[in-house]
Image (tube, rainbow, N blue to C red; front, side, top):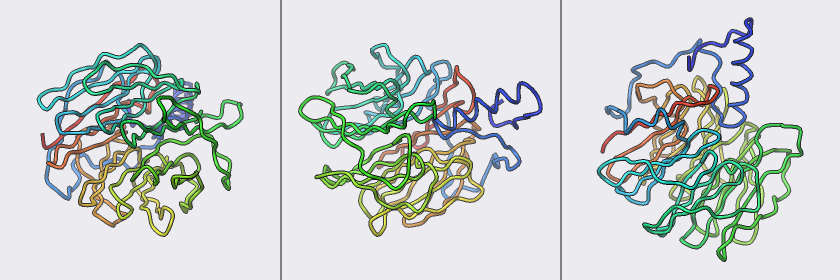
Length: 349
């Protein structure tokens, strides 16, 4: 049962603990202690009712959601061996046709070009209303995040998050000139295995975050490390300007931070489960997707948020919203062994 206690005194409990730890390494989703259960109806800063957007249960977990317009929203995920994508056209959700391939981890686009990235170095692209097509990359490691700077430029990050006995090899890829090229990782002050997400405020102001609290900044000429004040894994980031760029992460306890003074100022969200995804509205209000079915609403400029009822205990991994208040949160049973069960929630359509 998702979110139930792991009894390590039984063989089944040992197996679940191992699976839970593997899921945590890959997705930040392990939750093996239910002593502090989430209030099923917590106080909400804004009264609203989240409900099912569509039923992805038999298609696998969903990890990311993004849209360029209210009538052009995408969410991606799947099972380890089979990626899936769903599209909202302003009226209804429908599953998209994809080339065969493994799990998709993230989606982003700009200028009418949509990118999806996933396991085994997988990258897919959709131009305009055309078909979704595979684009070769120079790596076979998982790609965890992608950010499109424009129709002609994008960044992707990844690396093998689990310690599988191989040498740590975090990945940065840059798409320019019609092809993906690998970019060297700059010197950092600690060892780390993977970068999990990349996001930019412009072509010369791009940020990447990853394992062990590592954060990097690209200034248009090269990448360099910036401080974060934490050694916890940083899973995702989003913003509209330097004033509201937010970062989230943490495994057992959530970590939330904002860009300030040339780095990220972070703090542990005591009593909150690990944070996986974040979306920042134009007014600076941040929405955080977390383990145990938790959504947080964080006021502009703040580092603390209020839980909002979602009606699920599944891991929530990605969130995105429109200027008119249509928000979508996605996730699934990522704290259990595959096959995963997916969940897609929305409000304000």
